[in-house]
Image (cartoon, rainbow, N blue to C red):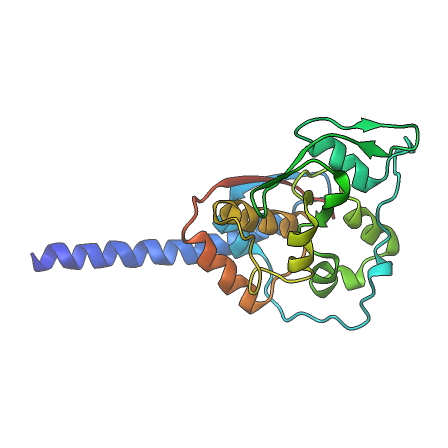
Length: 227
């Protein structure tokens, strides 16, 4: 029995050592990806590969992220593009892209809405959080691209105004969606967007996300690198 236990401990130690060796490899591969490249890896590996450093909000102003632009000049702002894309029942839109009718589902609080004005379009990783995590060094055009990211459906999400304003600029250390069934998706998408935009996490954020993922499947995520 003792030899069996010893062998088990030896095997466990070997696996632990292998995990330590593999984590930098994942981080290196992720860091070497260029904008436009797609990286696929389990979400826990994606979390482990995110750089960890303290946050700094010095100089942040929301106006430094120009948002709700009409990038394709079709008359619809980024906000309305998201509302049109995520509608459960399609609204009507006039020539100025004003929306009437329609219905939406807010996954943050597991609630349906039938008026666009009851919804906010949330930056899943808030603008202030992005600034704290690296966007303070970006160009104005890079911040504009982040604030209007329609190329990854996880970046912007239509949710109830009440839940979005409750969240404000908090990260997962202090706020998670009230709908418990959505929390694994939320944490996974948070990590995905930080990976996409090459943002950092702080130590408390890393701890919180690790704890959340302990109760979630280690879902593979596809991330197209933005910068």
